[in-house]
Length: 260
Image (tube, rainbow, N blue to C red):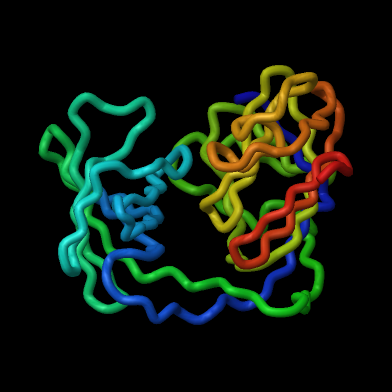
C-alpha cells in the first residue's frame, strides 16, 4: 500500500434498515460476530439449500469465498473453512440455528477456535425511490468523524482539507454507521498504491493504481473479488479521481471518473 489522500468532499446520506426476514433454518444470509481470544470482528455468511447446498463466507479479511461440501441437517450446517488459495487441511465450520439466531464455531487444524454468534440478515428490500437525508460532510471537522479500526500503527492525518495516509497503518472507520447511502469521494493514488473503500464495512470498492489495465474485480472501481466493472476509466497515478457510489439495499452502482 502507498499513500492515499482523500479530498474534503467526502459525504454520506443514510436511510433506515429494513426489517428482519421471516425465513427459518440455516439457509439464508447471516450477520456474524466472530470472537477470537480477546478480539471481536464482523463476518457474514450466506447458506443456500441447493441441491447441492452451497453459499459464501466473508472472513475477517479479503472477500466472500464460495463454500464447498456443505452439509445441512435440520437446524445445523457444517462445511470446510474456505480460503484463498485452498488449504490442504482446512478448518471446519459448524453453525446451529434457532429461529433468527445462530451460534457456531470455526475449528482450525491446529485446534484453535473462533466462536460465532449471528442474526439473520435484514432482507434489505426496497420499494420506490429513496428519500435522502441531509448531506453529511465527513471531513468538516477533520478527524472527529473517524476512528481507527483496530490498535496498531495509525498513519492517518488530516491536512489542508484532505485525509492522507502513510503506511503502515490500520484502516479508518466512520464513527457513524450508514445503511443506504450515496458516497462521493475523491482519491489521489500514488504509483503502485493499493487501498479500498468498504461499504457497510463488508463490500470493498477497490482503489488502486490501475491506469491502462483491463477491468477486473480486484482493480480500480471493482467490487473486490465479486463484481468486475464494464470498463476501467482509471487515471494515471498522482491525478485526482472521483468515485460516486450508491448503495441501496443489496444493489450498488459505482461511477468512476464519470463512467458507470
